[in-house]
Length: 416
Ligand SMILES: C[S@@+](CC[C@H](N)C(=O)[O-])C[C@H]1O[C@@H](n2cnc3c(N)ncnc32)[C@H](O)[C@@H]1O
Image (tube, rainbow, N blue to C red; front, top):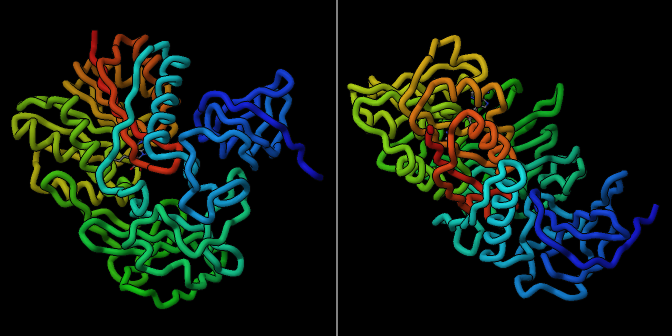
């Protein structure tokens, strides 16, 4: 069925890479548009409450519009990037407006937000050090189209780091694979993590440069097939080991930038008790442990077994740091964590949720530093933290994901 085309005047930005327009009294969420533009938009979805549409012709362009640098970006194409058609300055301003709007709407907080550039992504390209490709049944690599299972096959990805592209994964066949992740670490390791289709094996092609090969067995288990699959990263003056597709920031400047922001807010003092919840391989726990010293203590919690192993290895020289495996929702009780001087949280996109907010507030820490990759769940949790007596004292936002709608925030909450 032919989709309707509408002529729209595009209004403000909305969370998720959309702009908001109106047509016949209904809200239209438009992609590939910018605020203030007049566009012709093709409807891609209709619900009882709103429409979704792609701007397919720009009748009156915004001064912030540029030609997308990637040939795979555009209506109906690769769903990986949302803002390739905007200057980098405009992208950061759009993200700032989204964070400010989420804070206002969900937490009642009025705040001017500035999204800061993160060093290491010249022109907003070539930054992604971990790239998850989807594979077609024929074994070609690409990315899912927006809100679709269909795959846009690509021969290169402009936001991928040059060391990822050096592997040449897109030029190979990966029959039997559902997905292929290519990782290049700051210290020069490379790994390819293959997710096979059910009951299929994947013949690994020769690659352009050496890389460890791992097979993702599901349920968080990744087995090395060639090499150890352990990568080495650096942040501050420390090295970190990260196994397979374990969590590490994907932008080469992000770990250092966020670490700096967290420490500036946390102000850990010798002798303090600090918690690092959702600690990954121990990025923040290590720096907290160095600062609280041996009279203090750091307790890290992480749900993934491999990340816990890595964190324990990364913190081996810091006896005041302890890392345990568990879900924050249950493990604070299980390990009888009753109090803390300061708490750092860095949850996945789903945020903390009400129960974890209540549990953390009960620790009566003087300071909470909240690192968030989703401004909507951050704002929701800030409202709950406010009810429990924690006020937002400051917030910084960082462009850790240029060309996409994603933005990283670090918030400082003070008791009282
Ligand atoms: C955004 S990452 C942060 C990791 C670390 N702070 C860093 O910057 O490298 C979130 C981490 O939380 C872990 N995680 C997810 N859900 C969890 C839960 N319910 N309880 C504990 N850890 C969880 C993930 O495995 C991941 O390592």
